[in-house]
Length: 153
Length: 70
Image 1 (cartoon, chains in turn brown, red):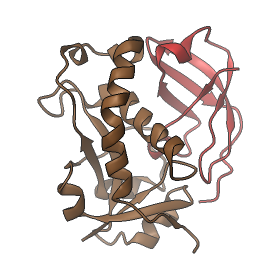
Image 2 (tube, chains in turn brown, orange):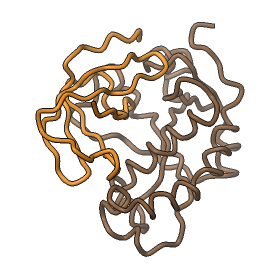
Image 3 (cartoon, one colour):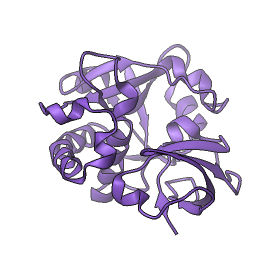
Image 4 (tube, one colour):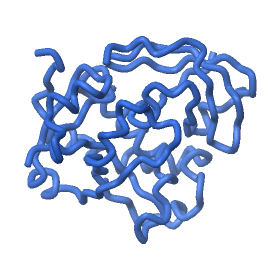
C-alpha cells in the first residue's frame, strides 16, 4: 500500500522543514484528548486507498510538489493515526480525501509544561526547546518522502 | 504588516481561517489589522483581515480569493 504526502512547502531543505515543524507545533493543542498525551505533534499524509490513487490525491490538493512513502517505512519510525479533519470550513474538493487522511505522530518529549493548553503559543523558551526536539524527527520524516516529485511531471 | 502561515490542508478555499500564533508573532496584532499570509508552493501570498484574537488563536478573513491552480 502506497501513501502520498503533498508538500506544504515551497521546496525541500531547511526552510521547508522549519515550516513543517512549526505547523506540527501550532496544531499540538488540537489533538488534546485524542490519546493519553496532552497533545500531539502530527503531520498530515493521504493514503492511496479506497479509490483515491496518487494522481487523484495530488490533483485535488494545491501543492505542486509531493513525495510518496510506504506504510511500512513510516511505521518503522512513527505511529500512524487515521484521523478526519472535522471543520465546517474544510473545502469541498478536499473533503472526500478525509477518508484517507492519516496523521504521522512525531514523538512528544517528557515535559510537564506541555500539559498546559496554549503554553507553546506563549512560552518562547519552551517553544525553542520543542523546536530543537522536533528537528531531527522532521528530518527523518522528510527523508522518507524523497525524492520529491512535481505534480505535472 | 504581520505575516503568518495558514494550514491549507484544513482551510484550502475557506474565506475564514484560524491560525495559532506564537507569542512573538502576536506582538502588536489587533482586530481589524490587515496581515499577509505566506504563500506556499502552488499557493500565492494573500492578504487577510484579523477578525478575532483569542489567546494564541487568531481568526482571519481573506481579502483576496484563492487563485492557486488545483
